Image 1 (cartoon, rainbow, N blue to C red):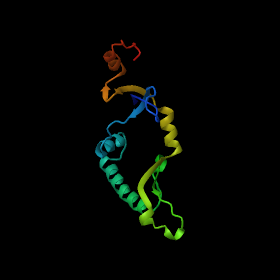
Image 2 (spheres, rainbow, N blue to C red):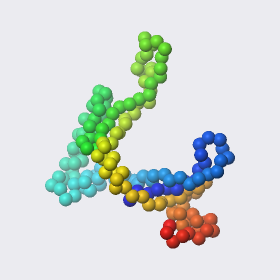
Image 3 (cartoon, one colour):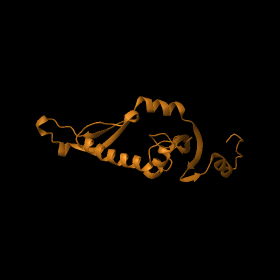
Image 4 (cartoon, rainbow, N blue to C red):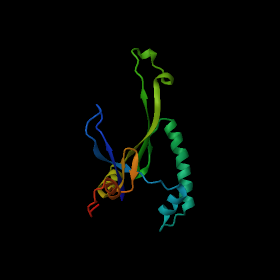
Length: 154
């Protein structure tokens, strides 16, 4: 279940407007490769070490492909590609990639299947609450601090 952190903040723009509560996704600590390999190979004939090795090899291959400007397909997961920002020039003869290409980054685009399976099945639960630099474990803890008794549904 995905957790939602509630944060009180104002609208972007001129200061002084009323603040509202917004939900932000809370990312859990990722598993390391060894833990992930153990989990992913459970109930299969593949060993965790084989999966770790395959991931290592694929990672090296993906780096080489991205450096050559290729898109890297990740099966039904989606694909990786290199992208960047670029400064414009008035005359085409003045454009030099070494000077005008900036902020290269790798972009992951999930496949339609991955996106649909996650979005269709995700459920959310309230997690921590943050206001003015203070984080509370739950809505109930925040309300208790405010002197407002929490409802039983929180």
